[in-house]
Image (cartoon, rainbow, N blue to C red; front, top):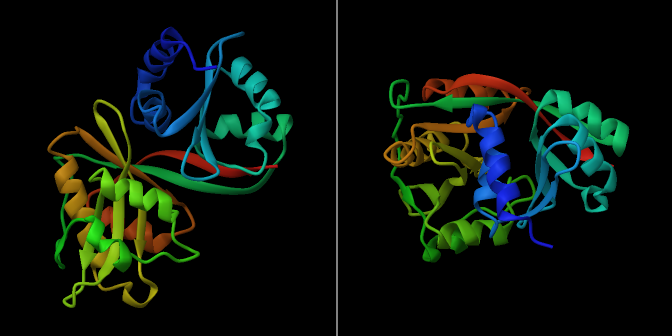
Length: 246
């Protein structure tokens, strides 16, 4: 059964107290073509939004409703919950059990703090680039997701002098004021050469013409990535967690 439009609207309003912190969840409610929504409306409001391109989901809502939802949503087993509030981790531990837990930072940049570093040619990826994009086991995207992002005009790349795609990033989610970047990946043999900073710079520069804030999440245990984003003007906004649901 599809969620009621009134429930979706009420959740968007409830989560908009912090549009940045809740950007992924708000985006899922605004873009049902990319998410399967499961909404709980008893004991408050909560949503679990399952991403259609991978076994992952985002969850937000009142504690009572979210706890009820996690207990009955069997489709969450074996999935990855990303960008969760630390307080909600305990709900999942009690309701279903969790495996690996990753602490991460939600980082943001705006027009006032952005410091682009465009060292290499960078720009939108087109369908003719798909055969050149690195698809590796450690890449944070599936091929089907990347193809979708390219078709939608949401994927950017940084290019070598030979025309190969060295680095990738795309617009993962969006709300009226906030754009969230995802899928940042650089070929292993081309890391440390400025391709990632160039790619992300080009994408952020484009997004800041339409959005007030651009954000992303990065593992707290990834100092090179943290330094890269800080050089571009990103600053920590909040701590989040991602984890495997058992």
